[in-house]
Image 1: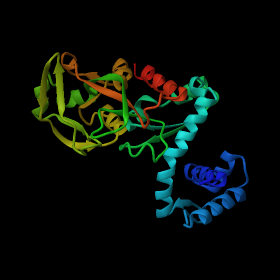
Image 2 (image 1 turned 90 degrees about the vertical axis):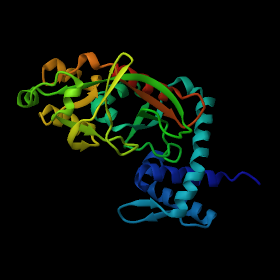
Image 3 (image 1 turned 180 degrees about the horizontal axis):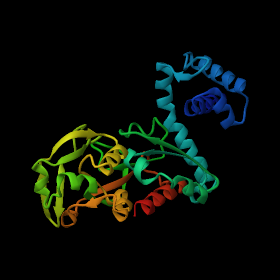
Image 4 (image 1 turned 120 degrees about the horizontal axis):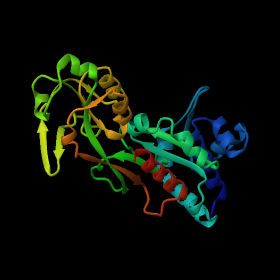
Length: 300
């Protein structure tokens, strides 16, 4: 069957519409007119024999047929882009568009104020960050790399551990003045208000563990507040609502300023891995390596 260049061109335009969310943004990205984008999509729909997009005056969305078609062709587009990158020698050049899936804790508490500095290092790079609890389908979503905590169950993605982050237990001076300071982890079970954090995978609260070398103590805490937002948890802890377990990298500035107090420094050997996940076994492009290295520096 002869190669149909118009079909590939139409698919590329469709991808630009899906990623941009509108015909206008797709036109800007491709350097053509909005009417040119519309004609290309219409020709593709006629070629396939199915309506791929639902169009309104305010939005554009994939139809069911369009979603199935796009999910099938997206990996091929990524492979073509990888081949073009390699052919142009860009495996060692940080440029292009980088789409990243970021864990909310990293996005809310570690990266704020740092993304601009990253972009300053690489003027030819643009960054598209997606923040959500679930990692989703990296291939279908066009994600280059995902940065998540812990190991994913039954994942076929390629994983690289970036760093192990220390977990500590903290409280605000106002809470300790009101409720008293617990001397040991087991004291938390005796009436202290603890702020639970929801595991995004199991949807259940994380267990409260305390590590001292190889010794692990699990404490059944009493909590009336369960949160799935790390920023809110830190804010409530700072406000004196209760005791929380957080990463040292998140709390260290607040501890230094006296806004938070670490409660059990002798029981602070718990570590939690921060991983990078890739949808392909191919050697990561320079833009991916640059971002991952920047994350490691930020959390350290």
